[in-house]
Length: 196
Image 1: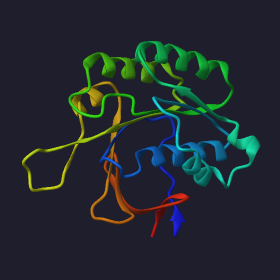
Image 2: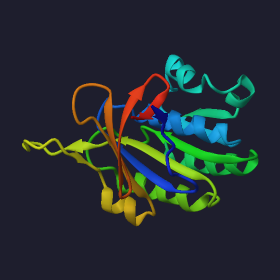
Image 3: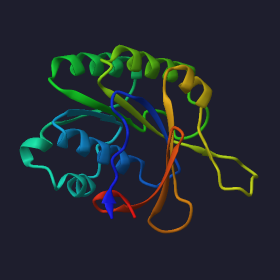
Image 4: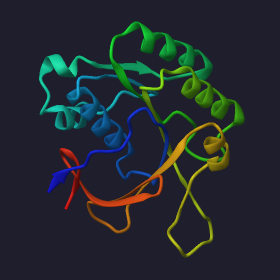
């Protein structure tokens, strides 16, 4: 198996995730890759990533490399967080990835003000920095088809974001990841996402 490498240089990405399929893990996987290439990562979330999971995904990096992962607590106003992230991304050298995990409520339409703040952040960052927003997707109630609904998809696209999805087609470790118009079938392991 080969460790996946996600196409994300300088992109603005909204990742819609089927519940409990590995959205945070995908963000950490991309963070470890960005740091492995010499970059720095800013991570903002209501809760810090699980320490065990973090250790598994970062174990191939040195302690000095891992120190280029900077986490902040994302609570309250996203507008204030946007200002802090933009300021920090210019103050620290070589920031190449910013991840906002669980940046909006877990269900319902994403409020317009939240989408506007995300768009403002995307437009305020240097074009070499990738911005990854991770949120829970919805499912169509009453539908027999298992299909992930990307919340506020049109508004996110209008705000300059590519739409990615992460789903579990069946029970087990297999995951289906759509990155724009490309679809990957992969396996979720302790070390991240692997292509068969």
